[in-house]
Amino acid sequence: VGSDYDPIRIEHLLTHTSGLIRGTEVTADSRFDVWALRDTETGFPPGERYYYSNVGYRILGYALEAAAGTPYRELLRELLTDLGLGQTEPEITVEIRSRMAVGYDRLHDDRTPSPDDPLYPATWLETGTADGCLAATAGDLAAFGQFLLGGEGERLTSGRLVESGGPWTYGYGLERKGDLLRHGGSMPGFASTLVADLESGCAIAVLMNGPDEHDATWDIARFAADLYRGLDPTPPGDAEPYPSDSPLAPELEEHAALYGRYRSYNPWIPGFRVQQRVSGLTAQMAWGDVKPLTALDEADFRVGEEEWSPERLHFDAVVESQALRANLSGETYYRSDFE
Image (tube, rainbow, N blue to C red; front, side, top):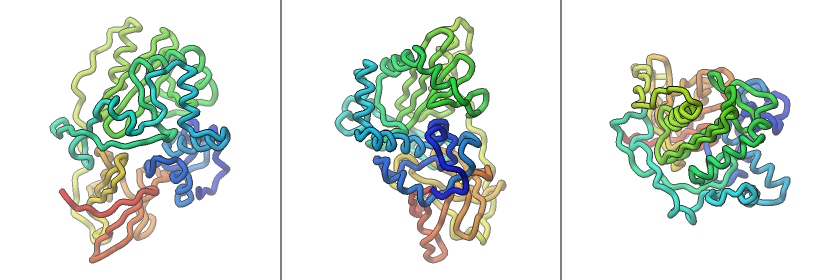
């Protein structure tokens, strides 16, 4: 990876403080995504701040394979057997598809989610990489939470903790707030949250076969945890609408070749729209996450409002005054200006 800073260490990958890109899940094989980091740059010195990186955990899985001389799925399978988690699969493949629920996503993946947008079956995918490749039942996930409560959760969050948002801090693979441990996960069509309460000894697993809008799985897990602890929480209800995006503005000549919609065949990040808004040039990412774009030169842009963001967007293949191709942090997209 391109970097002006000290080397990235295992601790930085475990705590999401490496400075690497988030990762676009280009393939179902960790090796290419790790290899492709040579075309990216880190955004800040390792250990300086928290920035969630899926590809960082892919590196960890690849490193485990190299050190053990054993495929990651087999390492996981041995661990799952030792823990007695017989209803958990170490990788998502077509062989287990008949046992899985059907996952759902919104019909439109390139705009802010709306309850008026219907749900449709999500694109099927296979994955066996260490940033998230387990298929489990709620019972097995809760049993893993009980295992964490036996001392492992305390150990994984007893070292250096980094602020990960609000009152939460991040240790080795787990967030912590007081006596609560948690981690969430999502992929096309599915979402989950695991909560373990060190004080009460209660572990809660919430699974959803749909989009985790407004952190719904966390809201349900938090409500259940509060009930168990004898509190009087308000039941989760209908979520408030997402805040309105900055209004659209007239397009500028300097960016005329860039405006439009770009898509890939990657179900993780299927597409985005480049638009001019009152706030400036933006990319509306999949499922409505609007990111500001800061020009680095005519064809290259930093993605995100933070000056340290490692994410980059590059445009090329300009034909008849329109860019036909874009590369977002290692994944290639092509112009697809359908409404």
